[in-house]
Image (tube, rainbow, N blue to C red; front, side):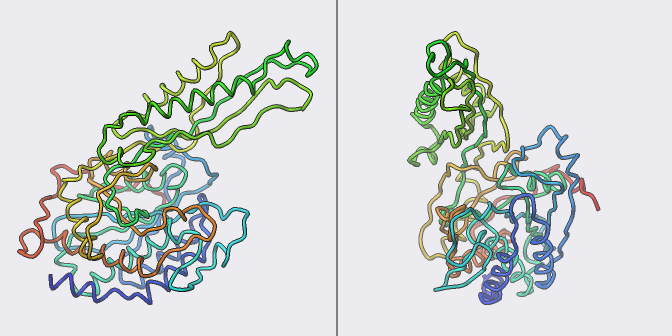
Amino acid sequence: MEIERAALAAVDPVALARDAAAALQVPSPTGDERVVLELLAETAAALGLEPDLHRHDLAALRRHPGHPGEEAARSELWGLTAELGGGVPRRICINGHVDVVEAGSAPWRHGPWSGAVEDGRLHGRGAVDMKAAVVAALHAVAAVRAAGAAEHVPAVVVQCVSAEEDGGLGTFAELERDAAFDAALINEPTGFDVVCAQAGALTFRGVVPGRAAHAAHRLEGHSAIDRYVAVHAALGEHERRINAGVEHPLMRELALPYPLLVGRVSGGAWSSQVPDRLEFEGRLGVPVGEDPARARAALEAVVAAALDDGEAPAEIEWTGGSFAPAETAPEHAWVRLVTAAVQDELGRPVRIAGVPWGADMRQFTARGIPCTMAGTRGIELAHAVDERVELSELVSLARAIVRVVARAGASSDTHTPNVGWEAPHGRPARHSSSEG
C-alpha cells in the first residue's frame, strides 16, 4: 500500500493535461498516425520510460492469414511501445489507439485539433476516443517509476497503436511482434464500467441487380430499388432474431446488443430509367461466442431468401475491418484486480459490463491473454462534433492505472487482494516482425 500511495502522489494532473492537449493538437486520422506517435515517443522519454517507435512490415501483415481488415488508405503502419522494466516476474500491457476518425464537416466550438481547455474539459478529436487516455497511461506508468516502485511491480508495456478504427491492424501488428503478456487493459471510454464482453462487428457491401427499362414501360423492367426494399425488411427481421433470447448475461443487459445497420444506399442512374443496380453497405453485430464465418453465412442466406424472385441474386462482399467478439470471465483474477482498482479510485462500486461495439480486446483474448477495458465517460462523444473529456476523469483514469500496476505486483500483501495469476507456461516469446 505504501508503494501505491507513493505512486499516486507522483501523478501530476497539470503535466497530464498539458501532454494530452499537445497530442490532440496533432491530427492523426486513421492512416496518418506517424507524427503523433513521434510526439508520444518524446513524451514517454521525457517521463523516463523506454520508447520504441517502429515501422511495421505492412506488406507482410496484409499477407498474414489473420489480417483483420482495413478501410482507410495507408502506405505505412507505425507503432510505439513505452516500457517500464519491473522486478516481479509478470508482464502486463496497457493498450490504446492514437488513430481517430475524421473531424467531419460541421463546425466545432474550438476546432477539432485545438486541444483547448474550457471549464475543466479538454476539447478535440481524440479527447475521448482515445489519445488522451493513451497519455494518461504513459503518465500512470511514469508515476510508478518516479515513486521508485519499479522493482515491486511487473514489467509494463504501454502500446500506442495505429489503425484501430478501421479493423485493428495496429494491435494485431504489435502482438505479432510481442505477445508475451500475462494480462492486458485497454482504456476505451467505458464510463468506468469494467468491460468483460464485446460484440463483434463485420462490414459488408451488397449489390442488388435489376433490369433496366424506360420509365414509361417500367413493367418490362425490374427495379433494383424495389428488390432492395425486400432485403432491407429481411435484414431488420434478422437483427430481431439475433437479439432475441441473448444468452450472454452481460450482453443481454444492453438495449440492443448486436446492431445490424445499413449505413449507405446508392441506386439508379436516371430519373426516367428503371434502376438496374443498387449498392448498400452496412455493419453486422456478431454475438459473443459466435464464429464470424457463421454470422457472415447467416446474413448471406437472409439476403438470398429475400431475393428469391426469379431475378439475378445479390452479391455480398465482406469489406473493411473484421472485429470478432470477445470475452474474459468476470470472475477472472485480472478482472477482479482491475475492478477493485477502479472502485477504490472512484470511491463507489463499478459495473461489470458488456458493450455492443468492436474493439481490440478480442486481439488479446484470441491469444489467451486475459483482457478487460475501462476508461472515462463520453462514448457518446466519440466520433461526434465537439468531442471532449473531463480532465478530472482523465486524472482518475491515470490514478486507476497506477493502482492496477501497483497491485499487479502484489501476491501476498494483506492489504491487497491476491492477484492469483502467474505467467502462463510456454507463453509466446517476444519477437520482431517490424522494419527498422
